[in-house]
Amino acid sequence: MLARQTDVRIITVKDYIKSPKDNGYRSYHMIVEVPVFFSSSKKNIRVEVQIRTIAMDFWASLDHQLKYKKQLDAQEAAEIGAELKKCADVIAETDCKMLSIRQKIEEKHPTQEEYRDVNE
Image 1 (cartoon, one colour):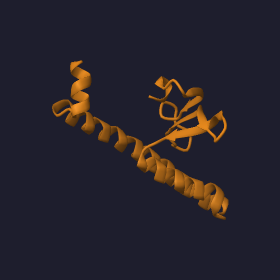
Image 2 (cartoon, rainbow, N blue to C red; image 1 turned 90 degrees about the vertical axis):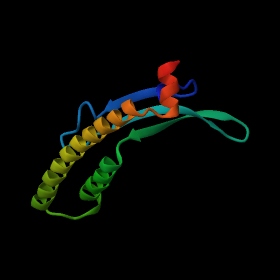
Image 3 (spheres, rainbow, N blue to C red; image 1 turned 180 degrees about the vertical axis):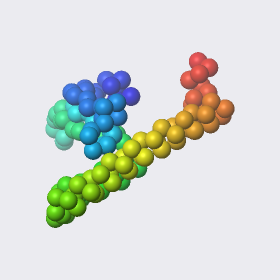
């Protein structure tokens, strides 16, 4: 959807959903350029957009704490990292199941907007 906007320019894309990181992280990252309007001018500014599920966002917060906030010895960090990897895999599986359920519901009962899109 962002790529279709005429005022947004995609600079780079990193698809960690198709190619998850080794630690299990899954997300879609983009660097985009968007217009920012100031009182006397407009400038195109680069911003990073990260798209991930709520569950993966929670996972990323814990992973961030593990890497940057806490003083753990190497063994503790490795054990917690392994637990986080397992959680990331469960989250990905759950996300896929939830998407499948949503698609089944929407097939049977499309929203007004979806109904219009299908019948136009």
